[in-house]
Length: 60
Image (tube, rainbow, N blue to C red; front, side):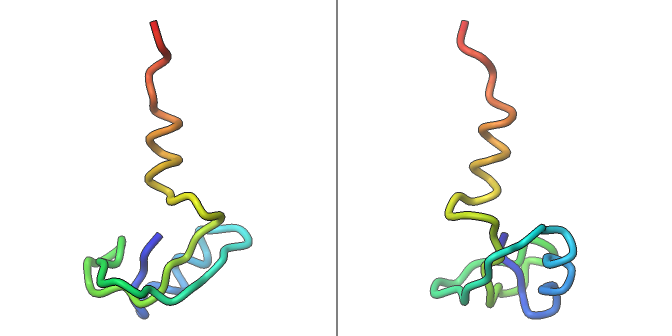
């Protein structure tokens, strides 16, 4: 979850035991699309990966 400085508190309220690190590449905040300064995450996998994994259709 990439967040700008204004949305760090909101991200921390959503996540349980988050990890935080500074963003080294330019990326948008997931709440407002401003430049993200921090990456807030549970593990080394992005939240997008988890969403895709959950919604994947079973093999026929």
